[in-house]
Amino acid sequence: MTGTAVIIPAKDEADRIGATVAAARALPGVDLVVVVDDGSADRTGRVARAAGARVVRHSRNRGKAAAMESGAEVVRLFDEERGGPPRHLLFLDADLGETAHTAVPLIEPVAAGEADMTIAVFVTRVKLGGHGFVVRLARDGIERATGWTPTQPLNGQRCLTRAAFEAARPLARGFGVETGLTIDLLRRGFRVREVEVEMSHRATGTDWRAQLHRTRQFRDVARALLARRALHV
Image (cartoon, rainbow, N blue to C red):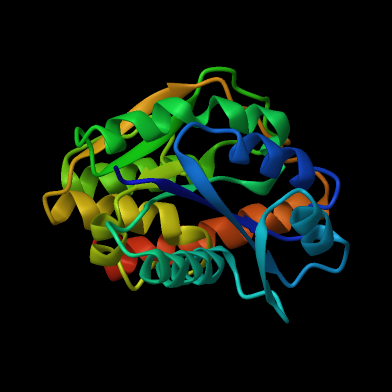
């Protein structure tokens, strides 16, 4: 039976990464948790390792897509070492904390061969500091490119087969990775399904750091859409 590996990109998440790793390790069928410390300035890597994760560190911040690629490469090496079918890949955000234990519905359709990629839809929505303009950009672009309208297009909690992940490489840059993944896999005929989960993560605030984060998101999503001819300019 194909197992599942959890990959967690993380930057400066020492306060939550331990609980996230512990919850991920307890998921049925999960036998490997990889944390990619993407240039953290705090104890993220050490806390993750103490919680039982395999940790790979980027010496500088390289962005979410690069962290996902690094994590997937670590899993591939472990897969080659053990032999057998490649593990499915479950990507989780570092700040989920103990709510990561509700990721089972993401794994099940992929493990059963009913979907090639699942995307989480958070049942409990946190109030965000922004105005949803990045979400609208991604949703409209995905619909324009594929005819499918996602509920939460930027949700990073996703489970994929190894074949689906490889088909989507190279991943879209930075925060455009989710938008690019969805478009690329749907265009290639892979089965994508949204799944409701009871997860929650830290809400984005309204200070200048949060505004800068949203600006970077908008830039990266727009780049992903432009590269796929899915953005009107």
